[in-house]
Image 1 (cartoon, rainbow, N blue to C red):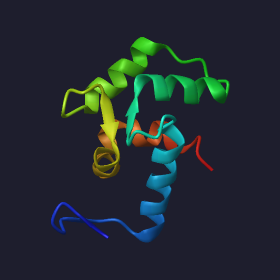
Image 2: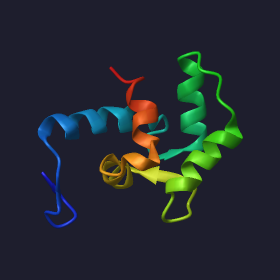
Image 3: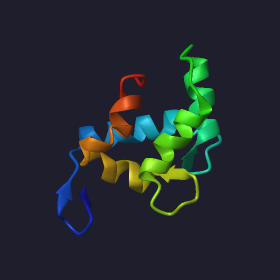
Length: 94
């Protein structure tokens, strides 16, 4: 599939992996990942998370200022490893 008018191409494997990461993190299934989704997900895997730090992680990438991350933004961040957002969570997802 193509993203952003063909400038970036996700392989099927990459797309599937990102969808699994997103679905794993989007606990309330509202199509966005918020601080509470992250906090509860990390808590469920016995990872001690600080809500303020999670707020900062989202703030770093939140282009719409709605305190959440959409699937489209997560896909776009896949091509920007400097954010570290995707890589922070992809290791937790089977």
